[in-house]
Length: 340
Image (cartoon, rainbow, N blue to C red):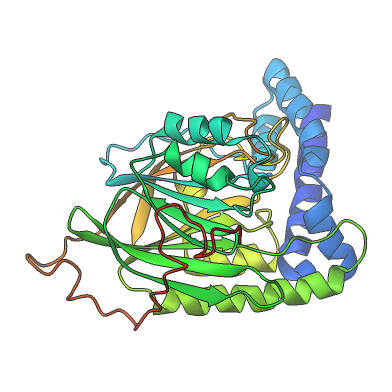
């Protein structure tokens, strides 16, 4: 006969599995399951999982330990990972909350991780001139910016493109970079959130269309690809499943723990992601910072073959892209110097 902790642990694991299957199969198609996915925090399930694991360990109950461990796995806990592969570059995605933390604090957060490529969201700052100040503090980067997303890079830009994001005034921003002779496509996105009070069906529809727009933009990009951004998407539901079906998730590949990125002061949800195609994460971390209401996600990547000698990207099969002066500017502002 199974012990009390064993029975409890298995019952709890079965309950979590039921919730997981509900989120995976019904997902956002009904309002109750949509609210379950986006507003029932994983900590609600984590609270009983940890005491059960401790109790099982104290009782040395192996079946209970197995069940409790399975429960933590269903909650998305990533075991410590160490890779022997040397990274090609470091990439960061970071929602800077319209610069509320100040240029100095944001620049310090970025500089501490020494990323080669940075994807920023909410760069439509509250304070005029803050982006000028921020980029002046990060002089090693070239800045691409459209609307409220920006890509900062230490590498030469082969081409770049902007794509409308339906249901919002936001846009997708993509670039193909020459990373020491290796092409890398980077796509920066910020999806509509599911509002706390009403408007759930409209937001669900907008996000579905935005997902299709992102997938089309990704399909048009050549070479290895990193899709970065604030997806306002926890690791469950239709949007996450559709992305996971096509791309690898960097934190799932090389992170440790739960990867929570929001809110910065006491993170409870994982909604900022880096998705990969033709590349692999060898390290993924969520640094502690309160320069924004989000924490950044920093990822070391390894990928791909080098460009043919002497091509400098000319041999890449890339679409004809829009080269507008308002998009490609060192200080990331429009021609009139105003925030976008």
